[in-house]
Image (cartoon, rainbow, N blue to C red; front, side, top):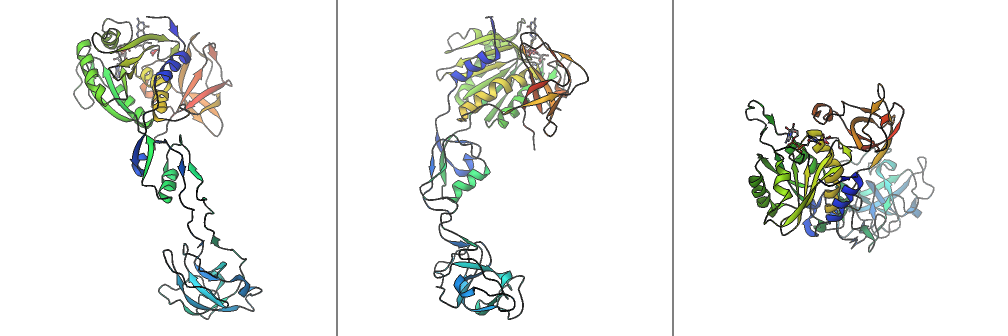
Length: 428
Ligand SMILES: Nc1nc2c(c(=O)[nH]1)N[C@H]1C(S)=C(S)[C@@H](COP(=O)(O)OP(=O)(O)OC[C@H]3O[C@@H](n4cnc5c(N)ncnc54)[C@H](O)[C@@H]3O)O[C@H]1N2
Ligand code: MOO
């Protein structure tokens, strides 16, 4: 093995090798969760025409100046406009047109009075609502005068035609999908979700649901890593656990290259006699590529492999088998790589500072960056470790929502210390 690598150097090495995926054109809902690969220009103003923000009457504000409850104004109602009306009637002096929210403001009108300011055409006092199915002709009494322009949403007041609605690099969430739909886009150019193949290795591994023989354990890592990759926005292919047989593993990996933008393996990277990933990938034989095995100055997650495989030079990250180590390694190295491939300008999770709450001091290995599992309190800005530092402690990991980062030079942390904290996904 080569010398020890710092977390930052190993991460930089990975990020330098992975590139944003080539953009493709996707249907709007398929693009949800992807990163835009074009600046989107607005082809038409939004809203496309002046329209009413209230159910009421389109009026000429000059006709209503000074009216109130004691001296209501009376207007002739000449028709009705609803959302979708193509040719609204013109509003002349002394006239009004009944209008629904979203209806195009008729020519001649410069304001809308909400129905609550009128008698709704009933001839009685103020109306709480329009009478469903009532006709829109006759007279309406208005008890309150609107300002010119009141309750009208002017054409282009949301977005002007020709402006940039969204820029390349924007992650498309629900509001962005809505905006794109609102300006009439059925397809958009985005970076596709990276396709990740997840392979766990170890002859001891049994698929959950099957019977557990002596000395065997259930394969949890391929499930954790698949779920984490999905949460990172990837399309995931989980492969059944591969036994400790280097030739078989190489065959599986070669077969998987066709559908992978990135491969993640778990286990078999340490210094044992059956460390199959290291054995299979340290010497690739006739398979094109190169994978480097390193010790990284972190805890957990010390043994790591990284390289490229196949003609297409598909990046491969070989993570350690201890369950917490493989998850932490995913968070620290794989997630940023996937986010970079997705085209996000910043592939990292937001970090926060938090005050350590703990029963007493805790030691941290000298020269290694330690990632403790913790529960973060965003209101009090504190973080409390859950469980110990052992990399087999999956019970505690499942109760954590944060990683507490203890710097390389720190050998002890005490309650009250300010530390960097990485906030993890909280499933909904
Ligand atoms: N002599 C040394 N031994 C070890 C060292 C070392 O420096 N010198 N490093 C230790 C560290 S740190 C780690 S991390 C592990 C990494 O080992 P491997 O990547 O080779 O992982 P395995 O040996 O295959 O498995 C380790 C452990 O995790 C369990 N495991 C593996 N895969 C899964 C899975 N898919 N689901 C659930 N659990 C899994 C496996 O049964 C082992 O218990 O090496 C240390 N040893
Ligand atoms: O690095 Mo190992 O990942 O400490 O358990």
